[in-house]
Each structure stands twice: as C-alpha cells, then as structure tokens.
Image 1 (tube, rainbow, N blue to C red):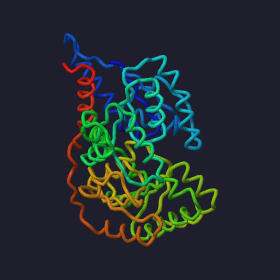
Image 2: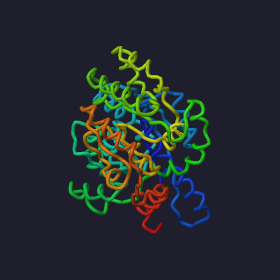
Image 3: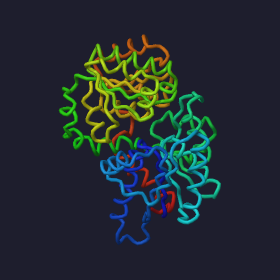
Image 4: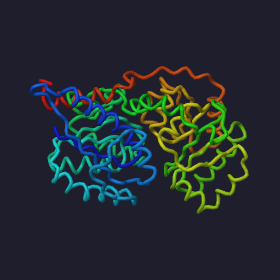
Length: 377
C-alpha cells in the first residue's frame, strides 16, 4: 500500500512522525506473513514554513526520514501559498501514484494536498479531523472544514470531533477515533527532552518561569495587537520570569514597529530564537505557566499538567479546557489576559488525560489503514 504523507510546517512533523514510525514497525512485524499488508511510504515537505536549520533539528529530534520530495513553495498570501502547493504537488502525485494521501492538521499545505489528491481521484486520509472553533475568521478553520469535506478517512483525536463531523453530514463509517498522535511524539521524546540543558543555558529554575509563544496574525500582524503583546510580556515579567521563543514573523513585526525596544529593559524577560522540538518540550514541561495562541501547545500542556492560557476567544480543542489545564483569555483585553494568567499561576493543576491520549495513536491509525486497504488485515 503506497502512502504519501504531506507536511508543511513544524507542527505537522510531530503528527506524522508517529504514523510513519508505526508503519515501519508494522512492516517489520509483517515479514514472512503471507498476504500481509506492507506499507511503502513517501514523505513530501511543501516548504510552507521553512528554515533549513530548524527543519533539520525537528527531523532529527523526531526521527523522521529525509523528505523524498521538497516542494520549496515558501510563504505568501493564503491564496498564493495554497495554489503554489497544489501546482507543485500535482506532478508528484501523478509520478508516484499513491494509494492514499495522508494529510495532518489544518495548515494551507493540508488543504492544498487534500484538494489536489481529491481532484485526481486519489483517496485522502485526514489526521486530526473534526476540530472546530466555530470562528471562520481563522484560516485554519476553513482549512479544516474543506479538508474534512473531501477526505475519505477522517481520524479524530477526541469525541467532540466525531460529533462535529456527524453534524456536518460526514458518514459515520469514514470517522475513526484514534487519539492524538502529537501526544505519541511527546511521550516518545519526554525523557530525552528532560535531559537537555536548556534551562541551565537560560539561567532558569524548574517551575519558576513562564513560557510565551504568540505568532497568530490576529495577535501580531497589527501594531495595536503587537502593543498588547508587549504590554502582556512586560506585565507578566513583573510576576514571574518569562521566556519568549520568538517566531520569525513576530520578531520582524516587533523590529519593524520599533516595539522591540520596549522589551529590552525587562530584566526577567528572555527573548530567544525558535527552539527545536526537544528543547522546547523540556522548557514547556518544566514551566509554571504557558501563555500561547498555538493549537498544539494547548494539547501538550494538558498532558504535561502545566497551566496554559490561550490568548484566543475560542478554541477548536475544548477538551483541553474541560479536561485539561487550558484557560481562554480575550486577546483584545490585556487586563483579562493578566487576570486569567494570575489565576492560572495561583491554581493547582489537576487535569485528567483525555481518552486515548496514551502515546499509541500512530499504531491505531496504521491498523485502521491496513484494514481499510485489506479488511482481512
């Protein structure tokens, strides 16, 4: 069975790595089994967000193979980026003739790959299907809805995602609740990450600092939004030491606006370059608080038991609020962000791990793929 996996951004790497590894284990265990399903895997990196050094670090940290195809599509508007991936991917699909295209997450590369495959009558599997924020101003929400609409197999991470898909008219037999492959990567790498010297290199003590990651256009693309981010960083750093690994686009916005100077006087605020997966996991796992606008970090902090404040009005991952450590804060209201952060710092975290977030989602996905390909498997 020829699988073609498509990744475009770093969060995609964490989701596809456990699936590819589980397929390789399946192949090793299938040696000598008459009529057993064997997977042939191709990895395509669209280059949607690409920094060679950072990509190499993530691939090494996660044990991913070198991509078979690198499309080098780069950044641009949503339309240009999606179109560039479709144009570059189509000849790859025609050449490789996969039996199934596997897409993960909700980035533009995911949407582009799903549409391109569907138009070529190649079946599509979407990993992390059914997540809904109900906020269509988020490009990711539109990507999720359209990708799910054309997918043939929809792998979900939580029960509410199943309910969302059924409500949208997706046939129940296409939906498979398998758990969360991002947690597979976390569990696989947790102990190795905790051995990293990142805290010592930053002069930090375990559970005595906060980690901040803010990069969404709604928070950093306007000067007004950036001013709120700077205000939050300044005020939070008066409460606790803060580490802010700065996304490249966020750093450009801060420099171009002149607002970066307002952060240089904060003695307890450390701005760093983006970190590799293991270093960031170590930093996050030992934090007292994480303040973010990321989707995946809401999930990781839930499993790590670290209080999380998500600077967004809604989340497509409500299970991280109802069962995990996540709290929402209004991105337009600095006072609300600080109040929510203060409550999170003062509260004891007592999360429950969501169902099937057990480190074995990749194995369940591979078993489902084999059964879909050959019901006797």
